[in-house]
Amino acid sequence: MADLKALTAALLEFRDARDWQQFHTLRNLIVSLNLEAGELLELTQWQRDDEIEALPADPVRAQALRDECADILLYLLLIADKAGIDLLEAARVKLLRNGEKYPVDKAYGSRAKYTELGN
Image (cartoon, rainbow, N blue to C red; front, side, top):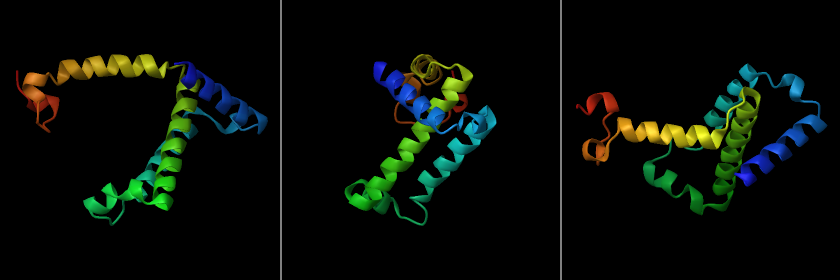
């Protein structure tokens, strides 16, 4: 948790030193996160599954993958800061809720959505 808080603090310091907070409305941050997610997706465009799986082994493409993942994380931290969300707690609660929606005995080995798993 301390690492996430320290990273957020460093990010806010970086942002504030450049007077970029004025541009960081919640809407703009959400849009920017999605643009970065699109750039991550673009790394896989027109590629076969085996080519995508080999992506981390290629130094240039692996760096692009790291950069896009980092951009997404940084925007997510800004969104969480702006919205007052404790990401670790939100993720913990979401994981618990997902466990209820996808019990092992019904979801094991299945790609079905929870609404299709039956009771």
